[in-house]
Image 1 (spheres, helix red, strand yellow):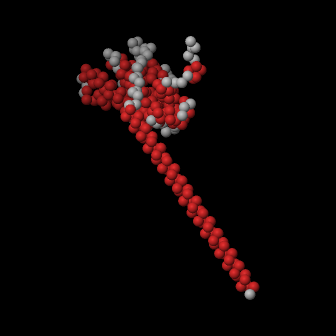
Image 2 (cartoon, one colour):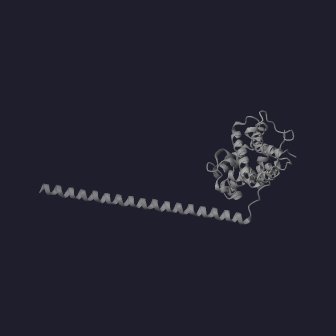
Length: 290
């Protein structure tokens, strides 16, 4: 049997699932580089070496593939954070949550760039701010238990959760480009500030031995294939779009014909005026001769 190589795979026809995954991967890279508005269906199709109708068939349009890309990235990051928060001790939870975000940024830089942009309304899954709120809601439960055990008001947990997650998220955005120091050192300083506070900062912070070298993972479920109803709605939307484009072309043709008719009338008027002036000049010359 011939081994499956890049060349042999390119010769055989992709299955629908393989084509869908290829389009998602290509779109993810383009969205990370150029954003939603800077990426076109034409570019996605050209990069995948397929026609535009193939993209429409799988996703209904650019909005559809963008929504899938954003949803996958959110599910992956949320899964890693959720796994980190399953630790027993609050300090370990904080360490692992910080490490989870930094690991995600390190391993999925393109995905994080997509998430931290002002997500387009077409994503259907919200902006980075909504993602932070989802993570904060999980951290809120952790803080509420910690507050109760220390005699603090648990009603303040939502506010502190937003503060804590916001601090980690903004640090992640900064680290996305600088990448120094390493993620464990960055996590140790984040935890140092969050756990010890400014007045009790440890000059040489380190994460605990149980979190050192930890690699978190989360299996993000594949987004469900569009239902028959969703496909029909996408087809209707596409048909409506084509119909409106056809009407616009018809209006443009009518306007062009109107302008041509007006130009022709203007030429006719100009010719009649020229002929009239020629007759008047001829009559005036005859009068002078008499």
